[in-house]
Length: 96
Image (tube, rainbow, N blue to C red):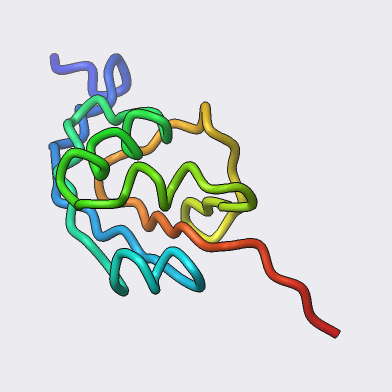
């Protein structure tokens, strides 16, 4: 008998859309598609992939005040990105 509870199916790799807002968007455009492997990648690893693919991305994503969100939740640099998640980079902003 097959034990379906013993192991969850492994997530397939996928192209993931990265969204850019604010000053990051001014430098890199509105979005970019990145291949995320089945095992995922750290947020810092994702930044490195984007930096290789887009001119000026390394500086834009490393600038002071740049934030990231995964599935609309603010995250820090050691966050793990899974294939197919929504990732957004944006500059800090204030409002009132």
